[in-house]
Image (tube, rainbow, N blue to C red):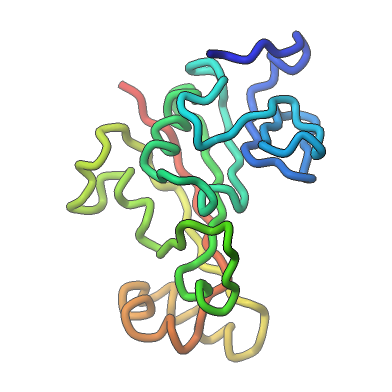
Length: 183
């Protein structure tokens, strides 16, 4: 079921998923909470999403994916509603902040390698055949002098950071930019 949008909203090529109070005039804003006045009220855990195929050139998912039941199915829905070459901008909490900032609505925490499943950069990429190309990923720490050094080490040696140091020097969140690949 695809939601009928007003003509002005239907022309927008940016999708702001889980917009909350971060409404964007240039986007189709989607949220579960009607009080945030989104363009589309939808539960993103109910698939398929009420959005048309191949509509969007950009998707924004800030602090959304960690709340959804199924990460793989959600990323497949993002792929479905996007055009080939669309940019997908995602921020999610890093797994090391899970104990420090326990949010009962969070179902998932992520590592710097979590989205490699969707880019084919991981041996476990067989969970979905849909593909994205990774353009950027960033690990973000609270701004302190020590964390500036930790950030440099984490960027240079990401596997070692996540395996050995993340528990001692926890990151705050991760940011990813992916490109939708459709054949």
